[in-house]
Length: 301
Image 1: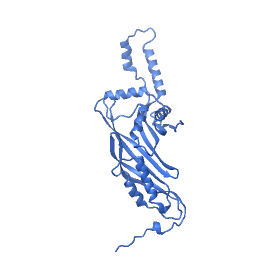
Image 2: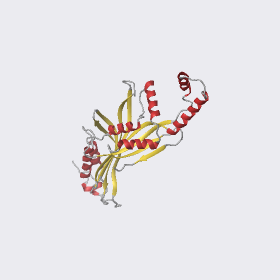
Image 3: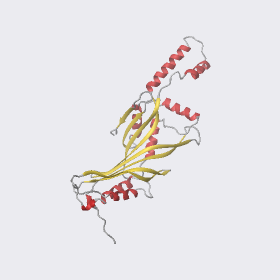
Image 4: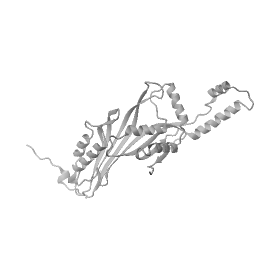
């Protein structure tokens, strides 16, 4: 006996009749495929998906339709702007009985990329980069924005200057005016005393967001990450030998930066290459129990 199952979301009217801006689901587990150049991996994402419900009298949307369409997003295909746009349009089309005209998607996942050591051949490891993708379709059209979080090391320029002064004072005390000295004696002194003081440095993070055009071949996630790391010059390392650690120390010494410097470096690197970049940097201070932060919004052309 085939009985028609009741669907109160259609048969019943809302008791309190108000339009709703967004209705849907949050925290859906979803496999996605990211393919960019030589990089191709299936990753685990968390997805939020919603549509609007402008008709005040309709009791509910069709959650199962959203879930099914979301599951088809990357089935057998790499994630791309056009597939995201098509999925959002389908979500709107399947909700015409709800008078829906807007849909949005939020994806969060970690992009895994293998990074080599600075000097040692065949040495390296995997870095994890948190990624967010936010896309929506409204009456104003389709918009998509990607956000990558990139960790790096930052050494304080002020602390470095104070450190150099202490080393200078120590040198002058050890070698008073007219004291005999040779290159060898100076080198020996530096080897023993160049760390009379050391500047403070800390793990830091840059959260960078850019717009993606709907006809882009892919989401350019690796390109974005690579540009950020190129701008900062002090990316965190995985497996290292002593030579790599020394090279990392040199990079930090040659790239002293406040949060202001870091934000401006990234903005300068991305400007003209990516669309409407915004930057938020955070230095997790080792001197203070609080963080130093800076924001940079898109620069006018």
